[in-house]
Length: 103
Image (cartoon, rainbow, N blue to C red; front, side, top):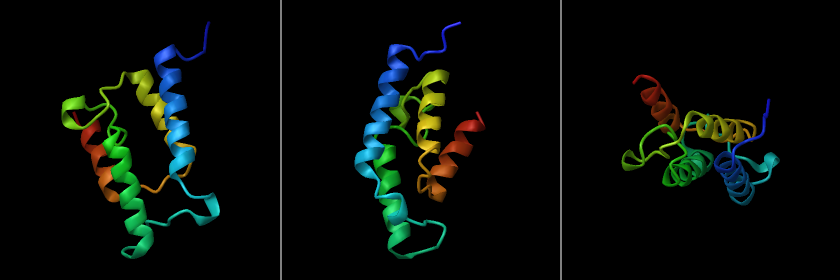
């Protein structure tokens, strides 16, 4: 069995990794969005808006609805890449994920 990513999934993995590397502050300076209000929440919200602009908040959603139109494998690649970086996730991102799971 070949457990390597297909070229499309590998390109997505590299793209997400590069984006996160250039967009996130150092781990010790990372936002704490669980505290309502304040700069940390606003930073996390702004970061999530950047994710949404790329279709990464709800990658399963079709592009015309703000998603990535991702295959199941692309969804797994993006979810893993995002999860291992301890991202700031606001309620909006959680809501989009829940809504997409309800289809």
